[in-house]
Image (cartoon, rainbow, N blue to C red; front, side, top):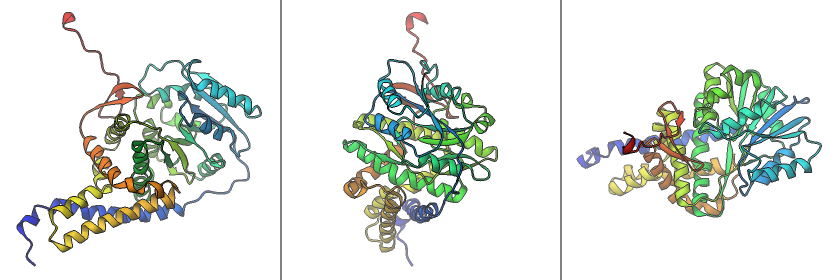
Amino acid sequence: MNIPISLLWLAPLIGLVAGSVAYCGLAILAAFHYRKSGAPKLTKFPPVSVLRPMAGDRDNTEAGLRSVFEQDYPVFEVILGVASPEDAAVPIARRLMAEYPNRPSRLVFSGDSPYPNRKVWQLRALWDEARYETIVMADSDIRWAPNCLKTVVSELTQEGVALVTCPYRATAGPSRWSQMEALGLNTDFISGMLTARMLNGMDYAIGCTLATRRAEIEAIGGLQGVQPYLSEDFVIGNRLHHLGRTVILSRSVIEHYIGNDSIRASWSHRLRWARGSRRSRPAGYVGEVFTKPTVPAVALLVLAPGWGAVAGLAVAALVMRLAVVWTASSLVLEDREMKRRWWLLPMEDISTFTVWALGFFGNKLVWRGHELIIQRDGTVLTPEPATSSALQ
């Protein structure tokens, strides 16, 4: 068989698309593998301290917090944290605390964080207030199903399990950029996580909801040990894994509200995520190229239109991509919005590939309006102010 010389120049692209087809096959298997997982049925549940940092009054703040108070769980306390009494989340917190008087709850003012990662600073203040050994930490922009606590605590009781981390279903606002980002999170992100889980187990965590025990966090140096990091959730899971503890992915899917960002804010958020991921998992970040088959497959169709086998490979990659989209969003996350927004997928795939490529460059990011510098080890610093020429 004679292969045109020009086609040889496409060998790297062909290999990339072939690798993407293989990855998509694994991602589909991983989704079914996850569906088979389960947790023991408990008849007696330990008491739980729920730690919930808060900041501002986003669209879902009240609904998300209400879902915590309405958990179907025997004994748990809710400890809420804000930086100051002037925070817009305070009236919401006080209203719900009054509405559920039989649910033990406290509001803690942590003060302004001297560190870039304000979430960990708040969690440290809440941690000191927690009464119980079993602790569940939750982000401020999520909503739980009524049985979430029962599920994650049941999973935590399994032998050797030190940490339960939860997948999430991104819920978008009305803006197109928010909807596109939700599509990416509900297809690419979850598929990569499920594939890593199937092949290697969970050696990291994602922070929308974490269930653990006080002793496990103390074993890795406490929350103060992860204070300097951008992705403290990843570090917590990774450190426990390296201590020989088991981290598992819960069957409880969390609803994560990603806001209604403009294009500028959306891209800033995506770049922050990409650069943080690059620092947390350098090799894994490079390998993410195989999780994004659309752009390479279309490029292959354009560059080698007359070579049937190559075109067939490209088409196979696109079909497999659609299969991954279905298994991830519908089978695993039960994302009802996919049927309405599927037509945004090509634009989202291009955006995701572009952000991934840009993530290799630069070390600056914007987080909650503050410019930060992320270092090679994943820690973040506030840039030092420029020295004026008069002072030099």
